[in-house]
Image (tube, rainbow, N blue to C red; front, side, top):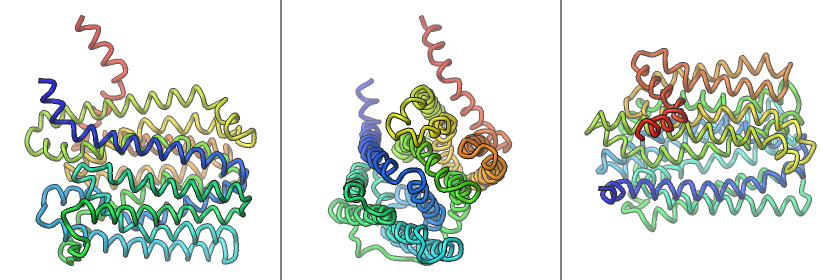
Length: 439
Protein backbone atom coordinates (compact mmCIF):
# COMPACT_ATOMS: atom_id res chain seq x y z
CA UNK A 1 0.00 0.00 0.00
CA UNK A 2 2.74 2.41 0.98
CA UNK A 3 4.71 1.54 -2.15
CA UNK A 4 1.71 2.34 -4.33
CA UNK A 5 1.11 5.60 -2.50
CA UNK A 6 4.75 6.57 -2.96
CA UNK A 7 4.63 5.82 -6.67
CA UNK A 8 1.61 8.08 -6.97
CA UNK A 9 3.29 11.07 -5.34
CA UNK A 10 6.82 10.34 -6.53
CA UNK A 11 6.83 12.85 -9.42
CA UNK A 12 5.58 15.60 -7.11
CA UNK A 13 8.12 14.78 -4.39
CA UNK A 14 10.97 14.76 -6.88
CA UNK A 15 9.70 17.98 -8.40
CA UNK A 16 9.60 19.60 -4.95
CA UNK A 17 13.08 18.33 -4.07
CA UNK A 18 14.48 19.79 -7.28
CA UNK A 19 12.92 23.18 -6.59
CA UNK A 20 14.00 23.24 -2.95
CA UNK A 21 17.50 21.97 -3.74
CA UNK A 22 17.98 24.65 -6.38
CA UNK A 23 16.63 27.33 -4.08
CA UNK A 24 18.92 26.28 -1.26
CA UNK A 25 21.94 26.54 -3.53
CA UNK A 26 20.74 29.86 -4.93
CA UNK A 27 20.00 31.11 -1.42
CA UNK A 28 23.45 30.14 -0.18
CA UNK A 29 25.20 31.81 -3.09
CA UNK A 30 22.98 34.87 -2.88
CA UNK A 31 23.49 35.16 0.86
CA UNK A 32 27.27 35.14 0.45
CA UNK A 33 27.02 37.83 -2.22
CA UNK A 34 24.66 39.92 -0.08
CA UNK A 35 27.03 39.81 2.89
CA UNK A 36 30.01 40.93 0.83
CA UNK A 37 28.10 43.66 -1.01
CA UNK A 38 26.47 44.98 2.18
CA UNK A 39 29.81 45.13 3.97
CA UNK A 40 31.53 46.70 0.97
CA UNK A 41 28.92 49.34 0.13
CA UNK A 42 28.01 50.04 3.79
CA UNK A 43 24.43 50.93 4.76
CA UNK A 44 24.07 54.03 2.59
CA UNK A 45 25.38 52.48 -0.63
CA UNK A 46 23.61 49.18 -0.01
CA UNK A 47 20.42 51.07 0.76
CA UNK A 48 20.60 52.94 -2.55
CA UNK A 49 21.01 49.65 -4.41
CA UNK A 50 18.13 48.07 -2.46
CA UNK A 51 15.92 51.08 -3.22
CA UNK A 52 16.62 50.72 -6.95
CA UNK A 53 15.92 46.98 -7.03
CA UNK A 54 12.72 47.47 -5.02
CA UNK A 55 11.52 49.96 -7.61
CA UNK A 56 12.32 47.46 -10.37
CA UNK A 57 10.21 44.86 -8.56
CA UNK A 58 7.33 47.34 -8.20
CA UNK A 59 7.29 48.32 -11.88
CA UNK A 60 8.09 44.77 -12.98
CA UNK A 61 4.67 43.58 -11.88
CA UNK A 62 3.40 45.07 -15.15
CA UNK A 63 4.63 41.90 -16.85
CA UNK A 64 2.84 39.54 -14.50
CA UNK A 65 -0.64 40.05 -15.99
CA UNK A 66 -2.00 37.29 -13.77
CA UNK A 67 -0.75 34.68 -16.22
CA UNK A 68 1.32 32.22 -14.21
CA UNK A 69 -1.37 30.06 -12.67
CA UNK A 70 -3.66 30.52 -15.67
CA UNK A 71 -1.03 29.37 -18.17
CA UNK A 72 -0.18 26.33 -16.02
CA UNK A 73 -3.87 25.49 -15.85
CA UNK A 74 -4.30 25.95 -19.62
CA UNK A 75 -1.34 23.70 -20.40
CA UNK A 76 -2.70 20.98 -18.10
CA UNK A 77 -6.34 21.16 -19.15
CA UNK A 78 -6.07 22.11 -22.86
CA UNK A 79 -3.02 20.33 -24.27
CA UNK A 80 -4.16 20.84 -27.85
CA UNK A 81 -3.69 24.62 -27.45
CA UNK A 82 -0.26 24.58 -25.79
CA UNK A 83 1.62 26.31 -28.62
CA UNK A 84 -1.03 29.00 -28.81
CA UNK A 85 -1.03 29.44 -25.03
CA UNK A 86 2.76 29.83 -24.85
CA UNK A 87 2.99 32.25 -27.78
CA UNK A 88 0.11 34.39 -26.59
CA UNK A 89 1.36 34.54 -23.00
CA UNK A 90 4.90 35.45 -24.10
CA UNK A 91 3.67 38.30 -26.30
CA UNK A 92 1.39 39.68 -23.60
CA UNK A 93 4.21 39.56 -21.06
CA UNK A 94 6.52 41.40 -23.47
CA UNK A 95 4.02 44.22 -23.89
CA UNK A 96 3.59 44.38 -20.12
CA UNK A 97 7.27 44.52 -19.19
CA UNK A 98 8.01 47.02 -21.95
CA UNK A 99 5.36 49.35 -20.56
CA UNK A 100 6.69 48.76 -17.04
CA UNK A 101 10.28 49.54 -18.00
CA UNK A 102 9.32 52.74 -19.79
CA UNK A 103 7.25 53.82 -16.76
CA UNK A 104 10.22 52.99 -14.50
CA UNK A 105 12.51 55.22 -16.57
CA UNK A 106 9.95 58.04 -16.44
CA UNK A 107 9.85 57.72 -12.63
CA UNK A 108 13.65 57.79 -12.47
CA UNK A 109 13.80 60.92 -14.62
CA UNK A 110 11.09 62.69 -12.60
CA UNK A 111 12.18 61.79 -9.05
CA UNK A 112 15.91 61.01 -9.29
CA UNK A 113 17.09 62.96 -12.33
CA UNK A 114 19.31 61.81 -15.23
CA UNK A 115 22.95 61.44 -14.32
CA UNK A 116 22.37 60.49 -10.68
CA UNK A 117 23.55 57.24 -9.13
CA UNK A 118 19.99 56.16 -8.42
CA UNK A 119 18.94 56.78 -12.02
CA UNK A 120 21.79 54.66 -13.37
CA UNK A 121 21.03 51.82 -10.95
CA UNK A 122 17.33 51.88 -11.84
CA UNK A 123 17.94 51.99 -15.60
CA UNK A 124 20.46 49.15 -15.66
CA UNK A 125 18.75 46.80 -13.19
CA UNK A 126 15.37 47.58 -14.75
CA UNK A 127 16.52 46.36 -18.17
CA UNK A 128 16.30 42.84 -16.75
CA UNK A 129 12.51 43.17 -17.00
CA UNK A 130 12.72 42.90 -20.79
CA UNK A 131 13.66 39.22 -20.50
CA UNK A 132 10.61 38.30 -18.40
CA UNK A 133 8.59 36.92 -21.38
CA UNK A 134 10.81 33.83 -21.33
CA UNK A 135 9.17 32.97 -17.99
CA UNK A 136 6.46 31.17 -19.98
CA UNK A 137 8.98 28.35 -20.41
CA UNK A 138 9.06 28.15 -16.60
CA UNK A 139 5.26 27.77 -16.65
CA UNK A 140 5.57 24.95 -19.20
CA UNK A 141 8.00 22.90 -17.11
CA UNK A 142 5.97 23.50 -13.93
CA UNK A 143 2.78 22.32 -15.62
CA UNK A 144 4.51 19.10 -16.69
CA UNK A 145 6.09 18.63 -13.23
CA UNK A 146 9.61 19.03 -14.64
CA UNK A 147 10.99 21.64 -12.28
CA UNK A 148 14.54 20.32 -12.60
CA UNK A 149 14.95 22.18 -15.89
CA UNK A 150 13.81 25.46 -14.37
CA UNK A 151 16.18 24.79 -11.46
CA UNK A 152 19.11 24.34 -13.85
CA UNK A 153 18.35 27.65 -15.54
CA UNK A 154 17.97 29.56 -12.30
CA UNK A 155 21.10 28.09 -10.77
CA UNK A 156 23.10 28.98 -13.89
CA UNK A 157 21.77 32.54 -13.71
CA UNK A 158 22.58 32.81 -10.01
CA UNK A 159 26.13 31.60 -10.58
CA UNK A 160 26.58 34.32 -13.20
CA UNK A 161 25.08 36.90 -10.83
CA UNK A 162 27.26 35.93 -7.88
CA UNK A 163 30.40 35.60 -9.96
CA UNK A 164 30.10 39.09 -11.42
CA UNK A 165 29.09 40.56 -8.06
CA UNK A 166 32.15 39.10 -6.36
CA UNK A 167 34.37 40.39 -9.16
CA UNK A 168 33.07 43.92 -8.61
CA UNK A 169 33.58 43.65 -4.84
CA UNK A 170 37.16 42.44 -5.14
CA UNK A 171 37.94 45.08 -7.76
CA UNK A 172 36.54 47.84 -5.54
CA UNK A 173 33.96 48.92 -8.11
CA UNK A 174 31.60 51.88 -7.87
CA UNK A 175 28.05 51.27 -6.62
CA UNK A 176 26.48 51.66 -10.08
CA UNK A 177 28.35 48.58 -11.31
CA UNK A 178 26.39 46.39 -8.91
CA UNK A 179 23.25 46.80 -11.03
CA UNK A 180 24.87 44.94 -13.93
CA UNK A 181 24.71 41.47 -12.28
CA UNK A 182 20.91 41.78 -12.08
CA UNK A 183 20.78 42.28 -15.85
CA UNK A 184 23.24 39.46 -16.51
CA UNK A 185 21.20 37.13 -14.30
CA UNK A 186 18.06 37.73 -16.39
CA UNK A 187 19.94 37.21 -19.66
CA UNK A 188 21.54 33.92 -18.59
CA UNK A 189 18.26 32.56 -17.19
CA UNK A 190 16.45 33.37 -20.43
CA UNK A 191 19.09 31.75 -22.63
CA UNK A 192 19.31 28.53 -20.59
CA UNK A 193 15.52 28.20 -20.35
CA UNK A 194 15.14 28.55 -24.11
CA UNK A 195 17.89 26.02 -24.77
CA UNK A 196 16.32 23.50 -22.38
CA UNK A 197 12.88 24.03 -23.88
CA UNK A 198 14.26 23.43 -27.36
CA UNK A 199 15.96 20.22 -26.18
CA UNK A 200 13.21 18.76 -23.97
CA UNK A 201 9.81 20.05 -25.12
CA UNK A 202 7.73 18.42 -27.83
CA UNK A 203 6.78 21.84 -29.19
CA UNK A 204 9.16 23.87 -31.30
CA UNK A 205 9.70 27.53 -30.52
CA UNK A 206 8.75 28.32 -34.10
CA UNK A 207 5.31 26.81 -33.43
CA UNK A 208 4.46 29.42 -30.79
CA UNK A 209 1.80 31.75 -32.09
CA UNK A 210 -0.20 34.69 -30.84
CA UNK A 211 -3.97 34.49 -30.96
CA UNK A 212 -6.05 37.57 -30.24
CA UNK A 213 -9.06 35.62 -29.03
CA UNK A 214 -6.96 33.55 -26.64
CA UNK A 215 -5.26 36.73 -25.43
CA UNK A 216 -8.62 38.27 -24.60
CA UNK A 217 -9.59 35.11 -22.70
CA UNK A 218 -6.38 35.15 -20.66
CA UNK A 219 -6.61 38.87 -19.92
CA UNK A 220 -10.28 38.58 -19.02
CA UNK A 221 -9.46 35.87 -16.51
CA UNK A 222 -6.13 37.30 -15.43
CA UNK A 223 -6.76 41.00 -14.87
CA UNK A 224 -8.06 40.42 -11.36
CA UNK A 225 -5.05 38.24 -10.54
CA UNK A 226 -2.82 40.91 -12.07
CA UNK A 227 -4.23 43.67 -9.88
CA UNK A 228 -3.95 41.37 -6.88
CA UNK A 229 -0.30 40.72 -7.76
CA UNK A 230 0.27 44.44 -8.14
CA UNK A 231 -1.09 45.02 -4.64
CA UNK A 232 0.98 42.08 -3.34
CA UNK A 233 4.20 43.58 -4.70
CA UNK A 234 3.27 46.93 -3.17
CA UNK A 235 3.12 45.53 0.33
CA UNK A 236 6.21 43.41 -0.34
CA UNK A 237 8.47 46.21 -1.65
CA UNK A 238 6.91 49.57 -0.85
CA UNK A 239 8.47 49.56 2.61
CA UNK A 240 11.98 50.12 1.24
CA UNK A 241 10.79 52.83 -1.15
CA UNK A 242 8.90 54.64 1.63
CA UNK A 243 11.91 54.33 3.93
CA UNK A 244 13.93 56.17 1.29
CA UNK A 245 11.23 58.86 1.07
CA UNK A 246 10.57 59.22 4.83
CA UNK A 247 14.02 58.39 6.24
CA UNK A 248 17.29 57.97 4.28
CA UNK A 249 19.35 55.50 2.27
CA UNK A 250 21.26 54.26 5.31
CA UNK A 251 17.99 53.27 7.01
CA UNK A 252 17.01 51.46 3.81
CA UNK A 253 20.29 49.56 3.90
CA UNK A 254 19.79 48.45 7.50
CA UNK A 255 16.20 47.41 6.75
CA UNK A 256 17.13 45.68 3.47
CA UNK A 257 19.53 43.31 5.23
CA UNK A 258 16.75 42.19 7.57
CA UNK A 259 14.14 41.97 4.79
CA UNK A 260 16.36 39.88 2.53
CA UNK A 261 17.20 37.46 5.32
CA UNK A 262 13.50 37.13 6.09
CA UNK A 263 12.40 36.78 2.47
CA UNK A 264 14.93 34.09 1.51
CA UNK A 265 12.60 31.53 3.08
CA UNK A 266 9.67 32.47 0.86
CA UNK A 267 10.79 30.03 -1.83
CA UNK A 268 9.77 27.08 0.39
CA UNK A 269 5.99 27.50 0.15
CA UNK A 270 6.27 28.48 -3.50
CA UNK A 271 8.20 25.29 -4.29
CA UNK A 272 5.85 23.03 -2.35
CA UNK A 273 2.65 24.54 -3.73
CA UNK A 274 3.92 24.72 -7.31
CA UNK A 275 4.65 21.00 -7.24
CA UNK A 276 1.26 19.92 -5.91
CA UNK A 277 -0.84 22.45 -7.82
CA UNK A 278 -1.52 20.22 -10.86
CA UNK A 279 -2.60 17.40 -8.52
CA UNK A 280 -4.92 19.72 -6.60
CA UNK A 281 -6.58 20.72 -9.88
CA UNK A 282 -7.28 17.05 -10.65
CA UNK A 283 -8.54 16.27 -7.13
CA UNK A 284 -10.96 19.21 -7.13
CA UNK A 285 -12.61 17.77 -10.23
CA UNK A 286 -12.62 14.11 -9.11
CA UNK A 287 -12.81 13.89 -5.29
CA UNK A 288 -13.83 16.98 -3.32
CA UNK A 289 -13.48 15.32 0.10
CA UNK A 290 -9.94 14.21 -0.63
CA UNK A 291 -9.21 17.64 -2.09
CA UNK A 292 -10.23 19.28 1.21
CA UNK A 293 -8.16 16.77 3.17
CA UNK A 294 -5.07 17.41 1.06
CA UNK A 295 -5.62 21.16 1.30
CA UNK A 296 -5.72 20.95 5.11
CA UNK A 297 -2.52 18.89 5.09
CA UNK A 298 -0.90 21.49 2.84
CA UNK A 299 -1.93 24.34 5.14
CA UNK A 300 -0.68 22.37 8.16
CA UNK A 301 2.71 21.74 6.60
CA UNK A 302 3.17 25.35 5.56
CA UNK A 303 2.09 26.76 8.93
CA UNK A 304 4.46 24.49 10.85
CA UNK A 305 7.36 25.36 8.55
CA UNK A 306 6.64 29.08 8.82
CA UNK A 307 6.51 29.01 12.62
CA UNK A 308 9.64 26.88 12.90
CA UNK A 309 11.59 29.31 10.74
CA UNK A 310 10.25 32.33 12.65
CA UNK A 311 11.24 30.83 16.01
CA UNK A 312 14.70 29.88 14.76
CA UNK A 313 15.38 33.33 13.31
CA UNK A 314 14.08 35.05 16.46
CA UNK A 315 16.58 33.10 18.56
CA UNK A 316 19.66 33.64 16.40
CA UNK A 317 19.09 37.13 14.91
CA UNK A 318 20.50 39.24 17.80
CA UNK A 319 23.97 37.74 17.54
CA UNK A 320 23.97 36.49 13.94
CA UNK A 321 23.56 39.79 12.10
CA UNK A 322 26.35 41.75 13.87
CA UNK A 323 28.65 38.76 13.48
CA UNK A 324 28.01 38.32 9.74
CA UNK A 325 27.30 41.84 8.52
CA UNK A 326 29.21 43.88 11.07
CA UNK A 327 28.18 46.39 13.71
CA UNK A 328 27.03 48.87 11.05
CA UNK A 329 24.00 46.61 10.62
CA UNK A 330 23.39 45.72 14.28
CA UNK A 331 20.01 47.48 14.19
CA UNK A 332 18.88 44.99 11.52
CA UNK A 333 18.50 42.28 14.18
CA UNK A 334 15.45 43.83 15.85
CA UNK A 335 13.89 44.49 12.43
CA UNK A 336 14.49 40.89 11.37
CA UNK A 337 12.81 39.47 14.49
CA UNK A 338 9.63 41.40 13.68
CA UNK A 339 9.75 40.86 9.92
CA UNK A 340 10.33 37.12 10.05
CA UNK A 341 6.98 36.40 11.74
CA UNK A 342 5.28 37.52 8.54
CA UNK A 343 6.57 34.23 7.11
CA UNK A 344 3.72 32.35 8.79
CA UNK A 345 1.14 34.30 6.79
CA UNK A 346 3.22 34.29 3.61
CA UNK A 347 3.44 30.50 3.79
CA UNK A 348 -0.31 30.14 4.26
CA UNK A 349 -0.94 32.59 1.42
CA UNK A 350 0.97 30.38 -1.02
CA UNK A 351 -1.63 27.64 -0.64
CA UNK A 352 -4.53 30.09 -0.45
CA UNK A 353 -3.54 31.64 -3.77
CA UNK A 354 -3.78 28.27 -5.52
CA UNK A 355 -7.16 27.56 -3.91
CA UNK A 356 -8.33 30.93 -5.25
CA UNK A 357 -7.27 29.92 -8.76
CA UNK A 358 -8.88 26.49 -8.56
CA UNK A 359 -12.15 27.89 -7.18
CA UNK A 360 -12.05 30.95 -9.45
CA UNK A 361 -12.45 33.28 -6.45
CA UNK A 362 -10.37 35.95 -8.14
CA UNK A 363 -12.27 38.99 -6.90
CA UNK A 364 -11.61 37.87 -3.35
CA UNK A 365 -7.88 37.77 -4.12
CA UNK A 366 -8.06 41.32 -5.41
CA UNK A 367 -9.90 42.47 -2.29
CA UNK A 368 -7.47 40.90 0.16
CA UNK A 369 -4.34 42.04 -1.63
CA UNK A 370 -5.79 45.52 -1.93
CA UNK A 371 -6.46 45.60 1.81
CA UNK A 372 -2.91 44.43 2.46
CA UNK A 373 -1.36 47.07 0.21
CA UNK A 374 -3.51 49.88 1.61
CA UNK A 375 -2.84 48.93 5.22
CA UNK A 376 0.89 48.64 4.55
CA UNK A 377 1.13 52.08 2.95
CA UNK A 378 -0.91 53.71 5.73
CA UNK A 379 0.99 51.99 8.53
CA UNK A 380 4.36 52.76 6.92
CA UNK A 381 3.37 56.42 6.60
CA UNK A 382 2.68 56.72 10.32
CA UNK A 383 5.22 54.27 11.76
CA UNK A 384 8.39 54.98 9.73
CA UNK A 385 8.84 58.62 10.88
CA UNK A 386 8.63 57.47 14.51
CA UNK A 387 10.21 53.99 14.53
CA UNK A 388 12.22 53.88 11.29
CA UNK A 389 12.96 50.39 10.02
CA UNK A 390 11.20 48.68 12.92
CA UNK A 391 8.05 50.60 12.07
CA UNK A 392 8.26 49.35 8.48
CA UNK A 393 8.68 45.79 9.77
CA UNK A 394 5.57 46.07 11.98
CA UNK A 395 3.65 47.48 9.02
CA UNK A 396 4.72 44.53 6.89
CA UNK A 397 3.72 41.96 9.51
CA UNK A 398 0.32 43.57 10.06
CA UNK A 399 -0.45 43.92 6.35
CA UNK A 400 0.42 40.27 5.66
CA UNK A 401 -1.82 39.14 8.51
CA UNK A 402 -4.69 41.28 7.23
CA UNK A 403 -4.40 40.19 3.60
CA UNK A 404 -3.64 36.51 4.05
CA UNK A 405 -5.57 35.53 7.16
CA UNK A 406 -8.10 37.88 8.76
CA UNK A 407 -9.63 38.98 5.45
CA UNK A 408 -10.38 35.34 4.57
CA UNK A 409 -13.01 35.32 7.32
CA UNK A 410 -14.91 38.27 5.86
CA UNK A 411 -16.14 36.57 2.68
CA UNK A 412 -18.72 33.74 3.16
CA UNK A 413 -17.34 31.75 0.24
CA UNK A 414 -13.84 31.71 1.70
CA UNK A 415 -14.81 31.28 5.34
CA UNK A 416 -14.39 27.47 5.19
CA UNK A 417 -10.80 28.04 4.08
CA UNK A 418 -10.31 30.43 7.00
CA UNK A 419 -11.17 27.58 9.37
CA UNK A 420 -8.67 25.34 7.57
CA UNK A 421 -6.00 28.03 7.99
CA UNK A 422 -6.93 28.63 11.63
CA UNK A 423 -6.76 24.89 12.20
CA UNK A 424 -3.32 24.89 10.59
CA UNK A 425 -2.05 27.48 13.07
CA UNK A 426 -2.75 24.92 15.81
CA UNK A 427 -0.99 22.13 13.91
CA UNK A 428 2.05 22.15 16.26
CA UNK A 429 -0.38 21.23 19.05
CA UNK A 430 -2.87 19.10 17.10
CA UNK A 431 -0.44 16.52 15.75
CA UNK A 432 1.38 15.73 19.02
CA UNK A 433 -2.00 15.54 20.80
CA UNK A 434 -3.28 13.15 18.15
CA UNK A 435 -0.25 10.93 18.60
CA UNK A 436 -0.74 10.88 22.37
CA UNK A 437 -4.42 9.93 22.07
CA UNK A 438 -3.56 7.03 19.76
CA UNK A 439 -1.45 5.35 22.41
